[in-house]
Length: 227
Length: 227
Image (cartoon, helix red, strand yellow):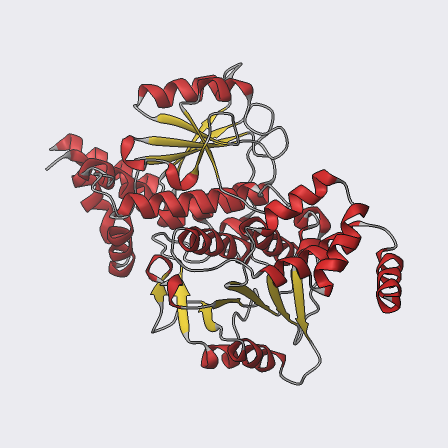
């Protein structure tokens, strides 16, 4: 048994069996095959609504670029969803957008910018089976930065037929994530997490659920050393 | 030539050719096959975002039930979309919800409530080709009223896999309308407006675009009487 599985088994009696069942059920629907990148979102309502959509559709990893704006949440909108996601923040470099894209590309992600472009395609035409996909949503006003536009592999737009040719970012993200996860679940792609990833995330979930988890974990490592 | 077509031809020189082209293009994507019912929505941001989604996805008719709450719009969110929709308000009866449902049923609509229910089905499983569909979204807090729950023909829910098992109404509406209009456009259903409906709506659009349209229309009817 791996040491992480041992830690998981050590921690799990500290939550109720119902809670543990819920974790075991939800983790089966989590994916890192699709990931979300948020570039300089400044309205906390938007940021919070996107995280809620990520949780609802099983997207585990969210990459948050803070070049000019600090990422803030509105708890009435997010409903605690951030607690169950793995948030990666990029705010230490001169150019955090480029750093994020490089990081994701090195991990095998295609960069898909959600914005109209001369080379764009409509959401229903995007082939989600073509590889791991990082979907980028840009800032409310300027939109996705030129840096990411230059680095993007593909461009997606939501088909629209009316006078008002735009959506709020929380609405865009919900439409895109609903549609792509639906397509993914109906494909033959192996989109689920590995057993190791599942264990690691469930350990995080337990640690965020119980009080003084740091002490319990410390005790585990001390006992482990003695063996 | 019908009198309505004559009126349209009489009015159209009052807008620019570009505007007229836009109207002619957008009207081809409008539908009454799907219609939206909003029951007692009280947050103007939500109401406005739903109208914007209706416009973007070509839903022309929106039925607004005001039992307890007056329907208010937030112009920064709606971006003027209400100007291009046909809004039907129901606020004169003791029971406006029932009046709305009866009216829609008499016009051949199936009533589809977007809410979890023992008999619900997931959004992707709904057969949009099975007939004209009125999709009901309920109030933010109590949700869809018991009256509509009792009268509904079907129940729809958006598949969700996370801890936060709910969406804001503006997000729900966007997901549902995007998905169902996409399916509709890819079906063999005759979802487009009749020529008469197209002309009537374009007349309304022109009247809402030009100043003193009432005077111009009055002149038309006077000249028409003389003939």
